[in-house]
Length: 64
Image (cartoon, rainbow, N blue to C red):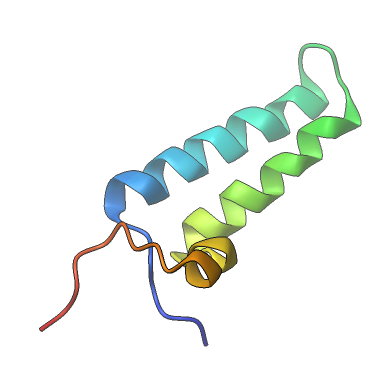
């Protein structure tokens, strides 16, 4: 499994943005591009971002 590399604020923002983008599919312009919201939603729920891993970015505190 991938290690957690997202902090709490990062995760909450990802989930909110993901839900907002998915809502576009059902409300508003109803464009299928809203399904791209699954990416931030899933990474926010999982707590890990593959792009952060590749770039060596961490927004969470290191555990001692």
